[in-house]
Image (cartoon, rainbow, N blue to C red):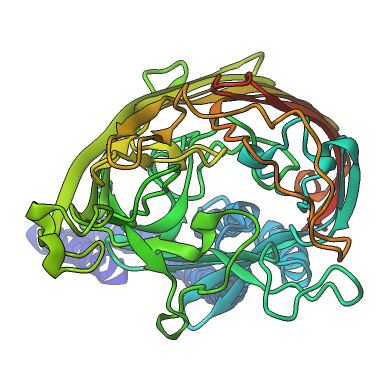
Length: 615
């Protein structure tokens, strides 16, 4: 600016000088003097203007420098706040991966820091609030963090009892297929058992890869008995495995799960993944008649389609259960467990199949399609099972039979022994609807087929045996209806279920007896007459003679209430949940009619449970 001004002044002087040279007269000399004075005045004014402009420039430079200094100070403060926010975020993520409130607060801090309108004061206030939430999360974490995985403990501690109108010598899990008939001495005695054995512990571990989620789950309770367990003093019941599985869940909806888990036969409330099962709300650890389930080894592959439909297939551990009468020694299905092979080889008073293991030819295969079109949850599924035994055609014939060795062989023998197989399975469906903003749930379940009795909670048989030693699969049907009301302080549930086992009877011409399951030619004449104990130890009820009493159908109705005086999941800091409730059940074991009548095993049961659930 100054250079321009000087140049203009020089031009003005030059022009004035030139004018004076061209008009060199006295008057022009006078004019020249006046003109010089005017030029000097103009130059003085221009110099003053230049000085003023320079002063303004210096003032602007000083203001810019001061503003730059303020900006640098603000940037340093923002950098410090961002660093503090980053540390707070890391602490929040280390405290819990599920704490969405903390993530929202940290996101708010980022927005305040990076936004042009954000202020350091507001950021500091947000950081203080975040620090409070982080401290609360550290004091009451939802999960634990260990080497890149999130570990969530769970379970509950239970104090429960059951009172039955007819004694079964059973804890809080009812053996429905063992309900006594009228002639049994136990039918004249009631029983009371208190128990903490259903107390449960669990642990869920979760880790995250770039495109997949890894999970593992283990769950156990004390509804098992070791060699030293007793109900007299120590009540030292052993811990048992309920579930133990691992899972890989890809982000594209494909999951692979393997281990011991609920069978894919079991209904789920959402999708087909483990830990989403629609279990009855009962206190009875054996659940309710009509509920189809198993907890066993499985390898399950599932695919989700937009979280609206799911298809899954699993291979699962098989186990044929058998009930038959009067058969000869002409078949072999399995063996008692080998203790060296880590199976239970001890005899069990609760049922012959508990210590027996069938020689299974192949796994059970279960396939399921589940879908949620917008209202309700629906499932259709199918089971394929294969059964096999070894048949001994000469196992019960006289030694004189020509085809079995004649007189050269003493007694029954293994000549002509062979393996015989049968294919079994069934199909089922589930439907569940929620009403009144999910306060009311209504569910229906049905399952039926041949050789699927063990999937019912009543434990009815899969198979019987023909007179020739080959397997005779039992037709089985299971059905259950549930109605549940869920409130903030109380849940109410009603269940009505039934399980049916068909006749599987045959006539053996060699022995001249009717064999199998549910034959109308069996005898039930002794089912109504009590017999005095034959073993004088006070703990061995007499067995009834002439009382086959094969179960035709089990029917149960259940009503229960859960009161929830405290539920920490609805509070900022979860301290667990307290839950108490009573349950009443009435069961009818209706047997197949035979010679002498059709006895029923009836029992009315009252349960109560007090539980503290871990947060």
